[in-house]
Image 1 (tube, rainbow, N blue to C red):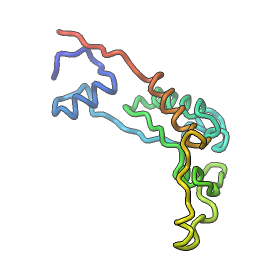
Image 2: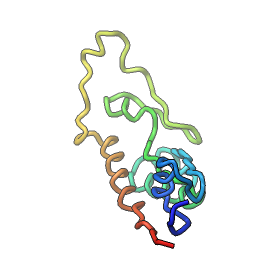
Image 3: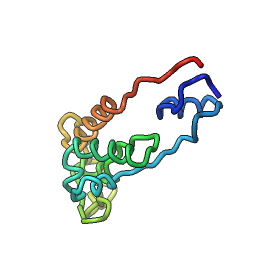
Length: 145
């Protein structure tokens, strides 16, 4: 083992394992998405409506389960939403895609790449990424034994 104070931070733990050394424990990645909604007592629609909700949900779940990752994935059809497609919210279920936007090959030629700066759904993801970065940075606890 390295000469570090234990327990390691998540970043130290992952980097130690990637470096083929023995961390204090095996890095544990729990990829939670909509589970933060339940943790905050919000509907799925409410939870994903604001970056702040997703950030708070991720941080609470990380503290609760003591896992080593923060997962900034919102929902699978987010990109479809960014292209102007329909998404469907349901209670207690993942967000889903609505009626397909592309009905034939010609429709593909008419698609326009979304402008990230003008896409509210993409902006939420970028905002939550920045907030999670700011709130989850931990000072390393290095010490020589």
